[in-house]
Every structure is written in structure tokens, then in C-alpha cells.
Figure (cartoon, rainbow, N blue to C red):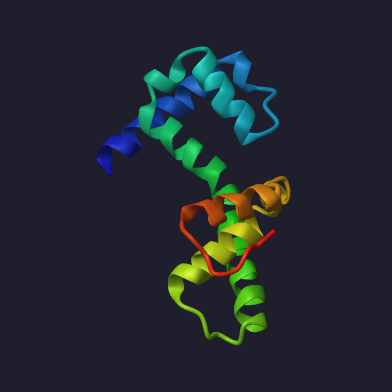
Length: 122
């Protein structure tokens, strides 16, 4: 923790004296300028912390989307499914834009070609 505190002290002193950091409006801009003027090499822990802070909203949204999908799927099927099937359903629900672009006829044809079936699908 001492290394981080020392890096923060130097970072604060350096940033207050640099005019490029006076008009920043967001953390993303701060991160961009740090990389642009290569200060991220001098303050690697600060840069890493800023990057982690910038990924928190994305991580949180992804997790919330996954739990929302799980609740929708589990409620409809009354919790009678195995984990693998639930995982597959969740991926399809979460990635519904991609799943909608897949042609069902192609999937059925691929499934038919896997092995001989008693009934024809198409």
C-alpha cells in the first residue's frame, strides 16, 4: 500500500502542474490523456485503477442482464431444467440480436445431418 500512496502523491503533484489535465470532464478523458502523453507508464497503478473504475459499469450491466435473463427463463420453465440447458437458454436470451440473425432452416439442416432420425424436420 505504501507504493500506491507514494505514486498517488507524485501523481497529484504532477497533474496539478500540467495544463493538459485542467479541463478534463470525465475519467475516460483522464485515462486517454494519460496514455496519450505516456504518463500511464510513470503511474501504472493509478492507470490500472482508472481502467478498473471504467469497467465497473459494463461489468455490472452484464451481470444484471444475466440475472434478469435467468429469472425470465427459470420462471417460464418452473425451475425444472438442468444447468447446461439453462446456460444455453440464457446465452440465447442475452444475445438475442445475434440469435435472431441465425437462419432456423440452417440449424435444422445441420441437426438433421448429425445422424439418422426417425422423423424428418423439414
